[in-house]
Every structure is written in C-alpha cells, then in structure tokens.
Amino acid sequence: MGEDSRLRAVVELAQRMAAAQALPEVAHAAAEGARRALGGAFAALSVWERERGRLRVLVNTGELAPGEEPYPEDESYPVHDFPEITEFLHERWTRGAEPRAWVETAAGPRGSRRVAVLRRRGRGCCVVAPIVLHGRAWGELYVARGSGVASFEREDADFASVLASVVAAGLVQYERLAEARRLAFTDPLTGLANRRAVEIRLDEALERHRATGEVVSLVVCDVNGLKKVNDTFGHATGDRLLERFGSVLSRCGAAVPGALAARLGGDEFCLLAVGADAETVERAAGEVCR
Image (cartoon, rainbow, N blue to C red; front, top):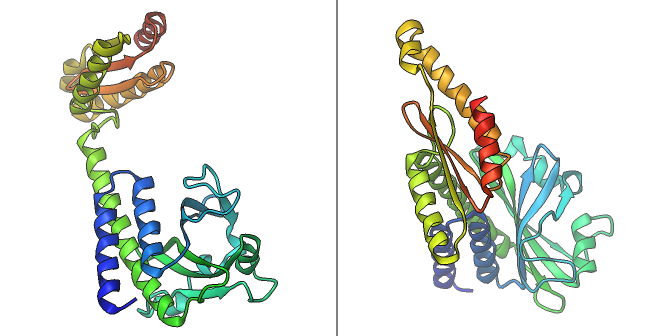
C-alpha cells in the first residue's frame, strides 16, 4: 500500500470512528478500518480490564474462525498470557517513546500464546499494536492474515502503531462525547435522569402506546418540607435530603422493569415506566412513600 493509500486509510478510520454513536460501533470502526488499512483477513480490538486481570475482546471482524463471534459476550484471556501489553514498558514509554507494534508468525516459538492461537485458527501471521489512553495501557489492536500469504513486515508494524494512535484518539473523543451526553441527561445532584431525559423517554413511550397500546405509567412526587429544611438547617442539608430521596426512588424504581427514575427540578421527582403492569408500579410508589 502506497503512502497516499495509507493516508486515505487513516482518514477513513478516523471518520468512521467519529461517526459511531455507541462503543460497539466505535470498536468495529476501529478494527475494520485497521484490517482494511493493513490488508488483513481478520482484526480484533481488545480492552485490558484491570479489575479482572483479563484482556477482553470487544469486536472481531473479517474472516472469523470457528467459535469467534463479531461481538462476543465474554471472550477474554488472562493478561499473564500477553505480558507485552500489561507490562506497559514503563522505562521506554515514560521517556517519551511511543509504544511500538510487533509482528508474530505461525512459525514462531512453540511456547508463545499468540503463536499457538495463530496455528489453531489457521492464520499465518499477526501484527499487535498497543493502545494507550491517558498515558496508560488500554488494550490492543490485533490484525491477522491467513496462511499462505505474505507476512507482515516491520513497515506494516510501524503503520499499525500509527493506526493504534488514531484509534486511541477516536476512543478519547468517544469518551468525551459519551460523558457530554450523560451530563446532558443526568441531574448533577442526585445522579438520576433529568427533565430532558424524561421528556424524550415519555415522547417515545407515548408513540409506542399509540402504536401498540403498551401501558405507560408516570408517578410524580415531591419532597414535603424542603423549604423549611433549607431555611432552618441550610441548603447543604437540603441537598443531602434530596440526594437521599433520590437514592430511595432509584432503589424502589429498580423493582419495576425498565423504569426511569428522575428529578424534574427542585423537590419534584418522577418514575416513568413502560410496559409494567399497574400493580407493580403502584407497589413501587407505595414503597417510595413509606
């Protein structure tokens, strides 16, 4: 692939990631863009889940081997099988050097976990590029070719490092947009949904009701005596009261499948349920008022 083609591939990958709305779409855009850019038959994007000590696959794309799924529910591997990612190479990276991708082939050493996977799945080689977010190892970009085709070379690994940097930038952008969307629909004091979120969900629910007759329930409540609490003990105490009530509403609402607990503003709260029977909603409302 020439320089112009590679530049176009980088731009296309970045654009596809920017257009994606959900993490699975972002991951697919990253993996598929890298697969095409590197002329691979298969690609995967994996995240290092530190709390579990595992490398979890978010997406597989291209020619899948038996047992591989495009969006696996829990395809993950112990991180000690892949020390290159988890060791993070502190000494080199903290001096300003970028993480470098590397190539592995099915003809590699028998003790290598990656070599064993290549052989088992009928692939000839792979290039692995670490992904770094906020100065920490986040996961890896993995692209493989089938047996009987040209192996990846050092030049391909260098290009994979560039692609991994583009993927990292795309993930950071996604995180920022996701956080902005979350804040736009979340009450900052209680962590519940806000009025805007309720309005959107209610509009959608009423459309479904008109189309299918699905039951829509709305429980509205307020916190009696909030003004007196604020005047007597201060607004900080009043805020704690609202937070506490928000927690109660959230806990009781959890008993109603798919319910949305929200703060409408001031001392007004609501519980919006779609599809739940009236008895279940009334029981939850009763628990809130106890």
